[in-house]
Length: 143
Image 1 (spheres, rainbow, N blue to C red):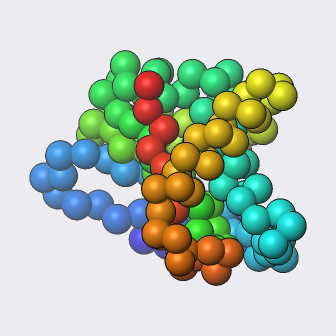
Image 2 (tube, rainbow, N blue to C red):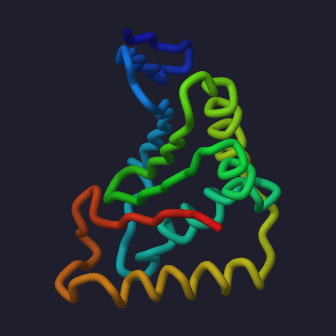
Image 3 (tube, rainbow, N blue to C red):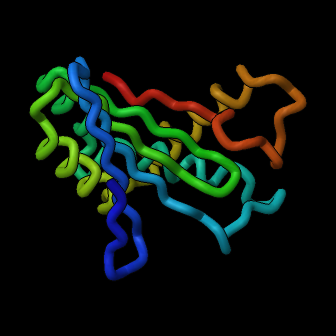
């Protein structure tokens, strides 16, 4: 089922009978804010900062409920996926609502997450650069 909201956003729902988990995803397009060599990686850093939620403990709260969040930065999108046990749709939607709120960030949190992004970059193939195809930068945010 597809619903178009007044702001142009799409909601897609697919029910799978007998599913063992529930997945809620948010895709945020970043068209019009393309990266250039001077700001390469900033979108990925932003993904790290917002995936923790405004209070910084989103991953721990999801794990307590039996779920987890993964985030990914592509060339022109960021996506956030919440996996939960069946019956926890309200929690999944609230979680994505939190992801859409910009957290309070400090110099310390930016430095910590920038170091993690740099470690991830070092693990990738040296030929993956500024034009990395969507789906190539994966980050699991877990405790």
